[in-house]
Length: 95
Image (cartoon, rainbow, N blue to C red):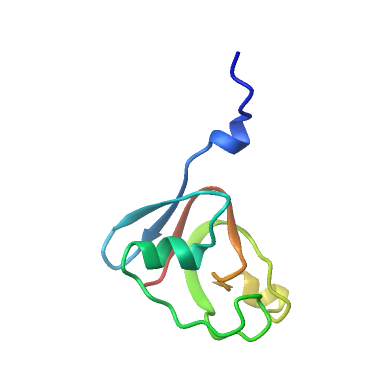
């Protein structure tokens, strides 16, 4: 019997809008790390959602915001990939 829940086994993907590149992300890694693993570097500073250095626009996706600086209005189109994550499915980044 498989004890892995559907949430744990669901594929999480970052899609880079400009190139169509798709990058798999595990729940254990940050979006910054997944992007870097694929050769896409985003400047960071605090890596804890406090400074906004890595603020990135996203086109679509279900985001779990983890920052302390962006407003609810800003969360509608921006995320901080150092601390935010994908809740489910695919996240399309404006990169």
